[in-house]
Each structure stands twice: as structure tokens, then as C-alpha cells.
Image (cartoon, rainbow, N blue to C red):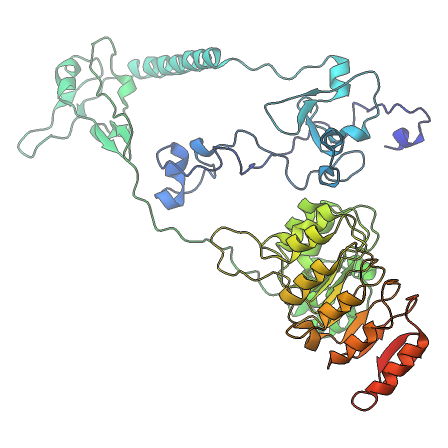
Length: 551
């Protein structure tokens, strides 16, 4: 990578000896194809191994009928050049989406963004049968090709040939051994056991009377022979008739289905073990008090000391707030670290997080109460429209690009999930909503007053479409915001005038009104509002056009 950065030419040459080459990433289900949507057949050898069908559960393989035909790259896959995930959600143009999606080479197994490759003399060959798969320009230009695989007929012919050779070796080994009498179990209680020899002298007469028993859908002949001798040892020159297997084996008895949860994580130790077998004098409670005074960077250093400190420093009480504001890249390792710490406040403002990453993140943070997404794209913020969104108390979506009335309707409407009984919005518990710089109108304010009954702080600064009628909607009779609003920020809303102050007289719980830098609001109107409200609720001007309730 250092050689690539130091190169002055615009063409980027990919070194063939890069360490990531050859490390193939295991793909995951697409969950959309016909095979993924099927149910287990209960008849294949993989299904019979499953515990829910009565098997031991050792193979850990999916049903043959449910093998995905278009597996996708895992969410942890990143580009080997820029170390970022797929960014096709941030682009609307279909042609540009290809340049920002992750592509895996079928020859060298490198995962890159096509836009990160600046190779002008060759082009990649896209594989239409597998998503996010191609032959990269480096391998295509070098004339490399993947491993040649035998067609199905040739492959089956090779397997049959190898199997026949193994059978012949087993027969030759058993034929050279001494003859030993073999007793068969009688078919009925009155019959006597019959003796057979390995040379096949009596086997031809008795074979027609043997009946194979079907056990668990497979034909078993081991019931008629001891463990030391197998049917491969008999002379196969005598023509025999084998029983015809059934068309489809009967289904195994399906066991009761239940959710298998992992065992609970053992609690962290109360004492710090030392090398000599003793324990440190300071207990865990004291150590946790000391760790609470350390910043997060020093906590990460302490986590590298030992396993005990690693568990203690990762306690969620030490990570109630995680700040990734203006982080240049959100990597899968960072997402895993956030999930492990389970914060209550998460700041992802002005980052390039994608919708896939945010969806995966909020689905695993049930205790999240404050989320900041200022400056992110609407493609990423739209992950909050799903039913897995936690019940937030504070939501900061200031200056989100592309967020208008239509997107606000999708954000506040109940998620459309099949079979869901709750028809309320997932943002119904929001108390602090920050919408500064958004291109929203009164349509969004109607939805806010209807879907957020507990809203107490609202930030509408720099919203150019907010006017006196918007204030009238928020303070109208019958709306929840009339009684719940305590703080409102209307700074730099140039369409708000002095007339809006008359509407705020309806709010019984209002404590702060920010009208700074509103060109059509005068200081005289603010002083008149203070004089009229002094009888019931005393207000004062802390700054110019900043009205605040006196305690």
C-alpha cells in the first residue's frame, strides 16, 4: 500500500504478492432466492443429521434443497484498498452503483471497489451467475484462469471408477482370508440358524431368502452378519437379486422445535489473579471505580493488559456514551466493538456509515436511547424505518442530505411488517428531536405532533419553510405538542414573524423560545410577550431574542 501511495502515475498497479490474496471469504445466504425461501425436506442426509429431525447434529450443514444459488458477501467484507464496506446505497445512478459496490475476484479472491482500481489498459469480466463476483483487471490482463472443474458426467464417471477400485481391493483382501462359518439369525423362532461360507457354495441358495431391513430410510444388511464379516467378502460371481429401494425414504419423526440459546456468560471475577497463584488485594468494585475516571482511549490500553482487565474495562457502565463524530471510516471491527459495549448514547454524526451497517448495528443495541446521525445521508438514516429500531429518547438528524416530507413520513410511520400487532411508530418515545437544516414543511410537523406524544424539545433552526402557520400547528388545540413542548429552537427561520409569539401563549409548559437571528422578529415584540406572560409565567431575555423562563 505504501508503494501505491507513493506512486506519481495515475495508474495503480496491484501487487500480486499482497497478503490478502488467496484468502477467500465465506459467503452468506441471500435470503431472497427460491432455495432460501424453501423449508427443510426432512429426507436428505443433512436433514437427518439435524437435531430437530432426530439426528446427532454433527454435520452443521443446511438442507440440500435449501442451498443458496446466489450467496452474497458477508457484511464484514471490506475493500482491500480503502478498507471500507460497499457504498452502493449512497449512489442513485445504476451505472455508478457498480463502481461503489464490493467485487470479489474468482481467481485471486481479492475484494475491492471497482472505483478504487485505476487500471486503464484492462477491464474486469463480471460473473452474471454469482453476485459481486468478477475476474479482476489484474488477473484478466495477466491471462490467468480459475481452476478447471470436471463436468457433471465426467465427475460422476471418475467417482464411480474410484469406488469400484476400492470395492475390488476390499473383496480381494477378504477372499484371501481363511473361510469362517457364518451363522444367520433365523427368520422365525422355529427355524435353526443357517451356515454360510465365504467361497459362496451355500450363499447362492440362501441369498434369495434373505430380507433386507429398512432402518431410518436406508437399507441395512448388517443385521444378518457379524461385525468381522461384511457382504463385500462373498463371491460376487453368483447372480443375485437385490431388493429395490423405495422411491423416497419415509420422513423421520420430527422432534419438538424450540429455540436453543447459548449458555449465559460467566460473571467477571471479583479479584485480579496474579502469576504466583495469589490474587490482588484490590477488589473488582474498586478497580471499576478507578476505570470510571479514565477516558476511552486509556481504557482500550488497559484492555490489553490481561484477560481480567479486558472483561472489566469492557463493562457497559464504562461505555454509556460512544462518540465517533467525524470518523473517516466505520469498519466492521468498530461495529463489533460497539455491540460488545452496548452504549446508551451513540454519536455517528458526519460519518460515511451505510444503511447495511446501521441496520446491523441498531438491531443489536436494544438499550440505545440517544442516536446522533447529523450530516449522514438519507440512504443510511432510512435504516430507522425498520421494525428493529430501538425505542429512542433523543434523535439527531440535522442536515441529513435528501430528507424531506416524503422521507419524514416513512420515518415516522409504523413499519410495514407482516403479522405485526403494534401499529404505533417506533419513534413514539422520542423526547428530543433535532431537525436543523432540513427541507421540511407543515406536513412533517403534523406527523410529528401526531406520532410523538412525549416530545418536549424540538429544534427547527435553519428550516427555511417554517413560518407562523407552523407554530400555529404545533400549539393548536388537541395536539400533544401544545402541552408537552418545553423548548423550541427557531433560530435563523426567516419566515417567522412577531405574530408567532401570540401562539406560544397557548403552551403551558414552554420554558425556552429561541428566536435569535430571525429577521422578522423584533426585540419590542419579545419584550411585549414578557410583559403579557409575567402574570402567569415570568420570562426574561438572556440574549437578544432568546426567551427563557425564570425559575
